Image (cartoon, rainbow, N blue to C red; front, side, top):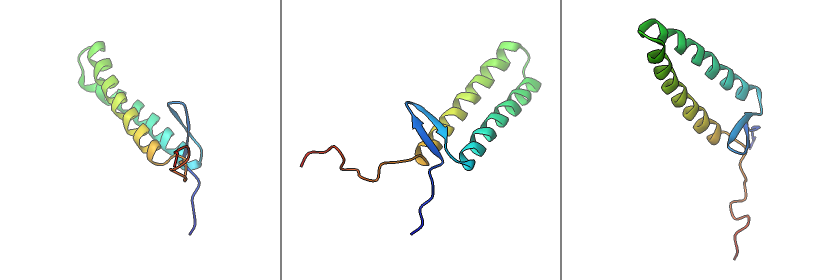
Length: 85
């Protein structure tokens, strides 16, 4: 069975890209954040309205990135490590 390298490594609460696919996901999230800012700015009527809508979008994007990175990160294969028998 062929195993693949992890896409992300965990550094505290931050997930750092560890492969080309991880970097691609991070860059795509960043580009989407910029795109979302311009799209929200077109429809909003004030600076605070733009910021609040964009901030909520970025929070949801960060949560999605974190969940994806958590599922695709380097994991311990031995789940019994540290348990007492």
